[in-house]
Image 1 (cartoon, rainbow, N blue to C red):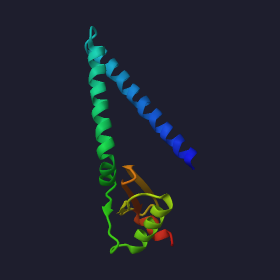
Image 2: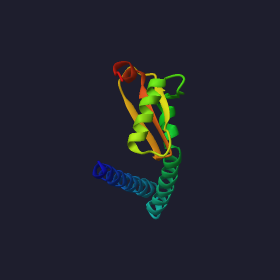
Image 3: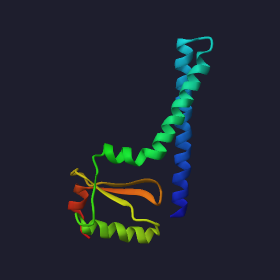
Image 4: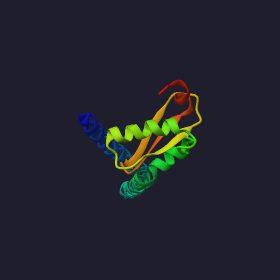
Length: 136
C-alpha cells in the first residue's frame, strides 16, 4: 500500500512539472508570435507567473474549490450518523490525526472522493447515489 502511495505522489509531481513545462512552452510560443524580438522571454515570464499563482491557489484552496464545484454540502453526525460512523472507522484504520469533514453531493451516480493537502485538513465527499446503493 505504501508503495502505491509513493508511486501516486511521484506521478503527481511528474504531472505537475509536465503541465508547467507545457504552460511555459505555450507562453513562449504566444509571446514569440506577437513580439518576435523578445516576446518569447516575456511570454515565458507571464506563463511562469501564472503557473506560480495557479499552484498556490490549487494548493491552499483546491479542496474548497473542488467541493464547491461539485455542489457538496457539509453534513453533521445528526444528519447522517451512519455515514459519520463509517468515516470515523476509516479514520481510525488509516491512523489519521483528525476527523475529516464529511460532505454529501446530490447526484444519483455512485461516486465518492477524498480531498485535502494534509491529514488534519481533509474532506470526504459521497454522492447520494452511492449512499442509496450501499449498505453498512
